Image (cartoon, rainbow, N blue to C red; front, side, top):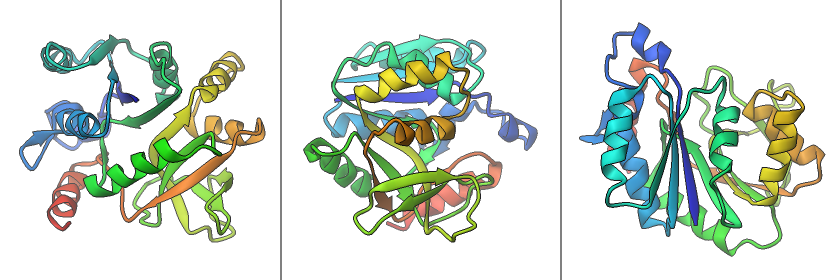
Amino acid sequence: MDYAIIAAGEGSRLVQEGIKCPKPLIRLQGTALIDRLIAIFMKNKASSIHIIVNEEMEEVQKHIKALARDLPINVLIKSTPSSMHSFYELSKFIRGDKFCLTTVDTIFQEIEFEEYIKTFIKEGSFDGLMAVTDFIDDEKPLYVNVNDEFTIHNFYDTNEKEYKYVSGGIYCLKQNAIGLLEKAIASGMFRMRNYQRYLIQEGLKLKAYPFSKIIDVDHAEDIQKAEYFLKTK
């Protein structure tokens, strides 16, 4: 199965808070974020791992290229205006019918991810399996409206109807989602959350998969939160 990692952000908030290390190389339990994801993907049937890194992160570029000598890693070096555009650039290399995409700073428990991937590989009736969580620690969460069978009806920026889940930022999708990504980019769409809404609008069937907790490392304090989370399995 194809995997893709967006590691093209500048990590500006971390820099402002005194973290000098590039985000992909921040260590949790002694392992760089990018290395952790790659290792987990390799354990979960990765035939290829596509990674986008921005043009300024030369240290990260060098690190990943070294890993690519022994692993099925494709490195794309390009600065983009958004994570959605980074996904678009990566999508040009994704050939398999099913793939999994996430950002480099997404922290989750490995055992939950393993079951998530197994479910997606077996799933035949849905076009995508989206990670969700009821742990809300994001500055701008994307709320997910699901029914009792976890079919996704829509995504919302606000929680006026008290939806239980938010997007976890891990996306398992089928190849038909890439065709719609190309149309979304051509129309001027700019954000991943709008793209997710677009998938629903265009009739793709998306299902939610609940994780107990997913943490994004956006701030310095998130590093400690993530360390503690991974220690308390």
